[in-house]
Image (spheres, rainbow, N blue to C red):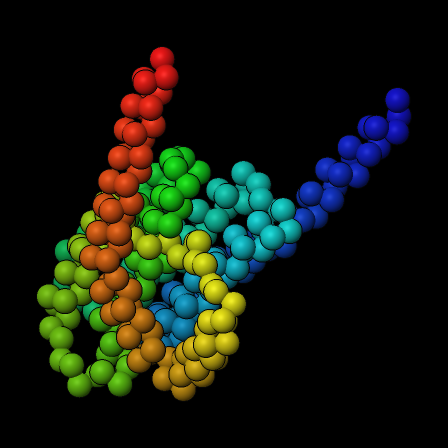
Length: 267
């Protein structure tokens, strides 16, 4: 009877080891997010933006690696949400406050508070409702995910650092508008693409690989311009994701009605 207990102990220890790597990546992301605030305090806003991008990269990696090595856990899930609040809620809010919102006084600070609260509410809702609903809904997020929200509120700053700096924006109007719109998108149920289930055909793999290498090269040479263009493309996808969601929802409803009718006929 002793052997099964030892086997269970070994299995438990292996699982704990598998949980360490993704959680370490999450904590590294937190450190990077907090470091972006330090860069903003020093007026090094270009480094602050780069830090947020790296935090988003680690946020993408930790979940994928956790699923790949079967190291997912409830602790990791909650830790990831806490990291997102810091890296894509608190950090972008502070960066933009130090850059321009401080000139608006109490209104600027209020906008920061509202944004961070919306990020926290969005993540709390995601933790409660994740893995619920039909499989086709996995292709969509409810509202804008927190990493995308963090990039969106930073867009005016990113544009000012890019090759589009010839675009003169009134930051006293543009920045509050971005904060308000992004906050609403975070807590809304507006469907946005999650890009979780992208099917890549073998014959298009070489073109995809070339595109990734080209994008990475451009990102190294023109980082803020590439981020600006990527943000614009992401926003332009909003109407497509909305109509795609509505189409799939209608098809799913029609399919369920048909199945119910067939079941009634059998009875």
